[in-house]
Length: 352
Image (cartoon, rainbow, N blue to C red; front, side, top):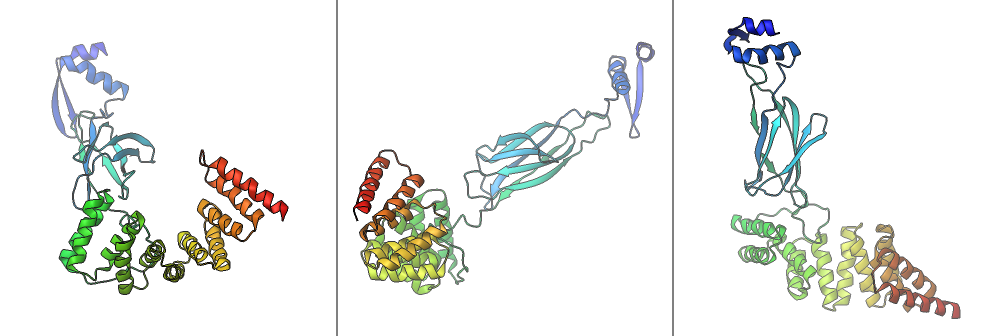
């Protein structure tokens, strides 16, 4: 190799039909790379950069982005900055995948294929930078209210101004900005008092926060507009129960179970309302249905069955339900109290 290099004061090479002069100082490195077979190896100078936005083209920060091989092996992971920007550098030629992992958000993940092929007259000297931007969609159930269930979407002609306020309100609620979200929903209803989606969402949100009187008003209207709505019917039943309208609560909670026959909570609350109305046999039937739907994992169902059985002087069964309750819901400080109650129930069962 030494003789070859010393022979050359100016070395002319041809790559892809193009000619370049290589000085004597670079000739040794050039020949070494040719003879070692590494001349064509890439310098890992490629990069993939881009931005992650939502559908409104607003940047999404603090979202994980992964660089994967063509066989889905993770090569590197980063996070978007406040402007939604991410970057991977020092990548060789090849086929890769960029994956967005929006953990803790209401957005759907995405995966994109990226091919990196650097083009250079001198192999190994070139580089390519690919910009791959993402526009994430909101998950289908992300806008669902707290009592939402699968069902037919209610179609309604809504004034554009009201719809815009509703969408803004939902976005606020999704971002945990409750006050702003409620105000937007109220404004949407003021523009269009028959706006079912706004009535249902605001009403069910109110129920879950203990605002039972306004929830009752909103959900009564929502059910009038859409009698097939599970969320509005169930929410109305809850509001009525809390307002001690027990007969009406039973009626609407019963309707809710027919609208969505697989709702654990609808059967649970129907059982509670029936128990309150002293309809113990029907209450047991509803609670057992909730138990089956939850596959025995709902601690609250076992608690309510224990109450019911104790009132019927079925002490052994009540104790059994409380045993399962503390197994499913171990709470320091409370468990010992429940165990003492179980002991007393078993004593009563023995004395019967």
